[in-house]
Amino acid sequence: MPKKRLSVALIGAGGNMRGAHVGRVTSDGAVRIAAVADPLESQARLLMERAGRDIPYFADWRRMLNEVETDAVLVSTPHREHYAHAKASLESGRHVLVEKPLVIQPGHAKRVLALAHERGLALVVAYQRHWMPHFVYARELVERGAVGEIRGVAAYVTQNWLGVGGWRLDPDLAGGGMFMDTGSHLLASTLWVTGLRPKLVSAAFDNIGCDVDVNGAVIVRFANDAIGTLTTTGNASRHDERLAISGSDGSLVLHLHQWRVRSMLLNDEPVEPPKRIKPSNPDAALFAWIRNGLVGYEPQDFALQVSRLTEAAYRSAAAGKPVAVRS
Image: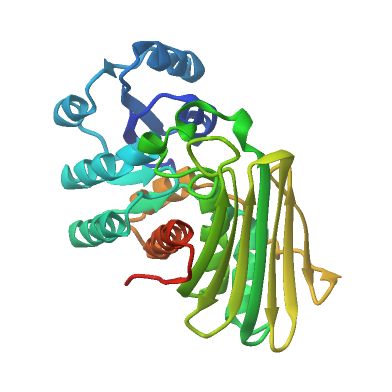
């Protein structure tokens, strides 16, 4: 049976939209890019080259939403803009995929998640690890008690993040540095796999002369009194990442290097996800949920916990003392 044909509008035509999302859209085979909005037409022209065809261009994203009807909107813009773009897109009756982090402020996260629920629309945050079979299986193992009650979590991510540069180094556009950006992936996967809810946070950041944080260390006490550490290093040579979960009955460790899962260990023994868990990505998941009427759709409530933990970490670092995660 052929796939139901869908159409999407794109807000943002930068490197991430061109390099990640356009390829996923075109690989679906039945999704049409109906329009693209970006303040810089030159960026949109590069995106059209990537897509292999001309696409109606708008300098004003609000005008695009008013004039072009689509099933969904994909958002890949500076973090500060996510709330306005996601909110307006949902209010126009469209499903939304937004790049991480969902938004900067926890209050905004709560509002757009509630709006999606009220309108019966999908709101997906582009956290790729949630569609990697190893992470999906790790979550299953935790849920069925393979490590027992979680007592501790240690997670880190390293990257040559300074080399990314651009608007991410502007606090007004980015809302934070490495911890807000790539660190958001670490927070999301940690909270999503474990199901833990942060309660108390103590954080320290080092800007190393930049206007935003580059390196950081965060200690978290969770609601079940488990303790976690989250470390982000943005002036490293390359990407490396681990999530280690220690429980009353065992341990689970996930390791990524250069953006690929390299191993998963359960009680120090290699374990592979079952073949029934297929690799996917946020865009493909959104399209599948739209086509099946949101059957099996997972509300992105963990993104609110990510936002609350992120806000608490920056507040703790600024105050120089532990702070409670606001609810």
